[in-house]
Structure formats: structure tokens, C-alpha cells
Length: 305
Ligand SMILES: Nc1nc2c(ncn2[C@@H]2O[C@H](COP(=O)(O)OP(=O)(O)OP(=O)(O)O)[C@@H](O)[C@H]2O)c(=O)[nH]1
Ligand SMILES: [Mg+2]
Image (cartoon, rainbow, N blue to C red; front, side, top):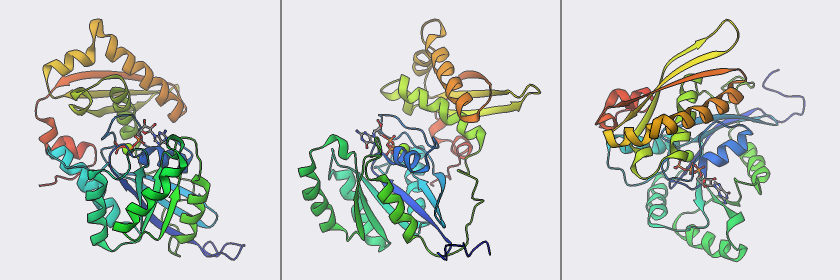
């Protein structure tokens, strides 16, 4: 009975990967489609470092939407692990949505992604994002140029920022995932553990409040996450930085920067976890963390080598 809803529509369920160049708006679109903040967003490239699952219910369909790190030419072990995670997300999916920033268009990065996607022969849809920020006349030539390289089953034009076109995309995705039973409980919205969410919300503030190499030289790990008798939660997190100079910037004069990062992350976390949060941040210098397997494993990334 549970797989045969009253409407007569069959139960559907499938993995749908969001892939694209860094900064295309993948995480913004995941959050918009899920109607919840699941993945962190910043104006800087390479914000997302691991796959984030959004579990969406639409009619009789369960859409398992996977946000992935942006795909770029990786150098550090961390970067290679991020890009591997993105390709694995696409390889494991029933359907891949290639997200392209319509403002930056067909860049070398997008070209390289298209080449690799074309070789997989997998189901592929094109989603042009940020249509709020370009003249409409630019969209058709861009679609034509992209479609020349890869045969897309369908093309959508959306604004993840203001929601334009997103309902249409959701309905189409819901209708096209394979028939089958739901793989996750329908009342779950993600598989992201609260400890990892806490570390990510701190990292989001670092991406928003620091610049140049500092955000890229930083990783955040939750050391302890303790529920208190009064219903509040105490979170202790370590911010690892690659160099002493980065530590000084992150701490700021008189500790002002890290205090602000902590205050904003705490407020945001209280809202997401729906309870009072006590957040304690500790900044540690650890050169070479971005080549360390244990640091990658802490954020759920596999060693790429
Ligand atoms: N104008 C406009 N900006 C957008 C839209 N979608 C996302 N953005 C902005 O684009 C920037 C990058 O968004 P993200 O969602 O972090 O992009 P991403 O593809 O997940 O980036 P990585 O995780 O680094 O690969 C942010 O500043 C967003 O606010 C959109 O539809 N319109
Ligand atoms: Mg992202």
C-alpha cells in the first residue's frame, strides 16, 4: 500500500546530481529546491567541499538531490578529493543537472566539464542559472553553444536566488526519477549530521568574512557536541589554518574577527537547530592539513591518491 498512493501515480525515487563549475549556484539551488538551508553558500569559488544530500518529497516522488563541490583543475590533495567527490556524485546519479552561470557562460572550466560529461553518455539536463542577472537575449545563443557540445535531454532557465523557474524544474525532476520505493524516510531532509552542519556554518562565516588565501587555508572540525539538561547544546569546534599569518588574520585585533565569526555562526546555528547554542571556537595552526588524509576524512572526503 505504501508504494501505491491513492492517486494511482507510481512511487518514484532517484538520485539527481547538481554539478558545475565553482560558483555556478549549485548550493543556492539545492537550498531553494529543498526549501531549507542544507549547504553553505558564499560569493567565493570552491565553497562546497563535499557532497550534501537534500531529500525532497514532491507528489509521489522522493528526489535525492546531491549538491557537489565545483569542478576545477585541482592541485592540493584537498582539491583533488573535492573534485573526485563531485564526479562520484554524478556517476552515482540517475540524472545529472549541469548548472551553468549564464553570466559567465561557456568558460574553459565549463568546456572541460562538458567534454567529460559527453564521454559518460549519462542522462543530462542543462540548467542555466542566474537568469536574473543577464539580458534574456543572451540565453538562447548560450543554450545553443552548450547544446552543440553535449545533447541535453532538457534545458531549464532558472534563478536560484529568486526562485524563477525552480517550480517547473522540480516538477520535471519529480516526473523523471525512476519508479521505485523511497530510499529514505519521507520526513528527513538531509543526511548531514548536526556536528558536520555546525562545522560548515562556521566555515561559511570564514568564507564570508575573510579573503584571499585565508578561507582556502582553513578547515573546521567539531570536537564535541553536547546536549545540556536545559535543552541547549554546547559545541566546541577547531579551526585549522595552514599558516601563522592566517591565524593572526582569523583571530583579528583583540580577537575581534573570530568573535564575530563565532557570534554570527552561533546565531545561525541556533536558528537551524531550533535551540540555544553555546559555541566555542579554537584556532590552531597546522601546516599541511590540506594534504592530510585524517583532515579530509573528518569532512567525509576520501583520499584521492
Ligand atoms: N544573481 C544571482 N546570484 C546567484 C544565483 N544563484 C547563486 N547566486 C550567487 O552565486 C554565488 C555562488 O553561489 P553558491 O551557491 O555558493 O555556488 P556553488 O556553485 O555552490 O559554488 P561552489 O560550492 O564554490 O562550487 C553566491 O554569491 C550566490 O548568492 C542566482 O540565481 N542569481
Ligand atoms: Mg556550493
